[in-house]
Length: 454
Ligand code: FES
Ligand SMILES: [Fe+2]
Image (cartoon, rainbow, N blue to C red; front, side, top):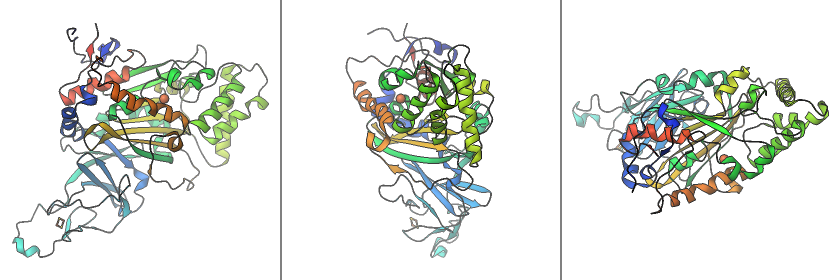
């Protein structure tokens, strides 16, 4: 065995090549410890604000042994409680079999066991035969509160009563992504499944661009997909290199194809729409398909990009869909996706986004609950009604490109258990997000830090 290298502690040191020990991915003890040291300490996005439209609307969110009940208790406030009856511990709101979580609307919550009742404010509203306790229930018969806050259109929860404020936790992400007005986007589809890998393996299938050329070979004909990954405190982000002298927007998600950009952009858009079902919209696809008729051959790529985005924006405005105006240099700076510690990724653009998350499944290090949701902008009141669809990790359920990503997950999970594997060696430039994830995880978990390779 080589001597273990120096532990990486600061963001600056992440430019060095590191090795990440496999413990965090495969150890049952580590997976058990995550519940208390990680999941009960961090801010987690637990649902969208628009899922709670009316007073009494509620959803639940589950992570390992904890279920959180999130309720709109008044026109302008949302509260979260531990979803457990304080009497004898029955889960208060059940998740219907086969569903990801409970969703509904109630004037109050009634425990199915002995009938204790709770108002939307979490206060106990009724205990049958309360007099039997002779006043001793005072102060311990309401629902236990969970911290909530809001950003980007999501409800965030934190089970740690002493946690730092959400704004401090998320910095600098709100400053970077607020111009994209993510809170105005609505779900086009959302799916979840139980996958055969650790939640980190699932997240790491999407937090880098290094895999694109090999895992998604079809994209190679559309251009170079070399990208960077940067650490931003606990969080990370990724983006593509832009060819020299090309519009800054090229560094963002809405990119051109190479060669005759009028033709290749349309081809890439059609492929993305049909085979990934994300990262673009029907309006963008239609506008790309018109490029060859609207622009002469030889139009420089920068002009093709401008024309494409300008006409698509105008087409959307004509149907009442308004993209935010984001300065191209800011688009370039924000890249294509942000990894919010520990388990949420937002792939943003001005008119759509793709979000992933993964969390443990029943404490088994070899399994996770994986979720993907695609959002876009809709005319007022025309967003589709969607629900979380249970979906196996297949092409039929998720589409071709995502299935390509999934195809590595179980194989990585198994491979990392090999006696012959000495630890992950993320690309220091293109996969720095993985090293940064483990640098931060180690601060919560007390072990598993990346170490310098040399
Ligand atoms: S456990 Fe809820 S009323 Fe008894
Ligand atoms: Fe991928």
